[in-house]
Image 1 (spheres, rainbow, N blue to C red):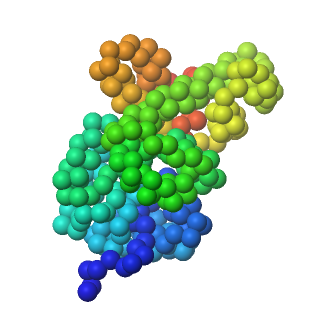
Image 2 (cartoon, rainbow, N blue to C red):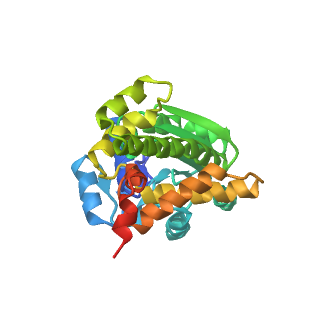
Length: 299
C-alpha cells in the first residue's frame, strides 16, 4: 500500500536550521536514515548532500516516519507542524520535540497527542549546534519512561548523555534551568573581558588567566575566543536565548522567585536585540558590555 510505513522507517526531522542540521549530521554519521523537511530549499539541499533525503512535503514525514524529531524556534511552530500532520498521526508514533518552549505547552501537547495514541517527548538540548555536532551536548527528556528507553538509540546519538527528567514538561523545565546558569556564565565572561579591555589588560592573557583560575567555566572555551575576535557567526543565536530568558523569568515569577540576575541578564539581551544583534551568535552580548551596542542604536 502506498501509505504503509516501511519495516525500518527513517527518522523524521522537521526543521533543519543550525540545530536541526547538526542533528541530521549526527544521525547520518550514526547510520540512521533521515527524512527531512524545512521551509528553505537550500537547507534541504544541504541535507541531501550529506546523505539524507528531502521530504516533498511535511505530510510525507508524518506518513513515512515512526519517530519524528522537531527542531523548531518555539512552541508556535510546533503547533503548526503538528496541525499539518494531524491526519497522518497514528498510535505508536513518537514525537521527539527538541524545541525550547514553555513547559505548560509541552504538557498540553503531550496530553493532546496521548489521546490519539501518539507519544510526545520534550527532549531539550543543553549545548549549541557546535556542541551537538561534536557529540558534547546533553539531552534532557520529559515524558513516558518506556518511550524514553525505546528511543535511547536516537537520543544517545544526539548528545553525549541523555537524562530522563520526569513527566511531560520536565525536559523543558530542566532546559530553562541549565540555560539560566549557562547564559549567566556567558554574560559574566563578556563583562569580565570587556572590563579587562577597558582597563588596559591584554585580552588574550585575560582569557588565559581566567581559564586557569577558579573563575573558569566552559563558556570560556565555547565563547571566549569568539568574543575576543568579535566573531559572531551564529552557533546559537542571541535572540533565541533572549526568548529562553523571558520564559525563565515568567516561570520563576510564577513560582514566587525574585529572578534578579535573570532580570538583569534579560535587560542586557533586550538592548542587544534592539541594536540589531539578535541574529548573531549569543557571544555578541559582549558588544553591549563594551558599550558598542548603545552606540549602534544612535542615529
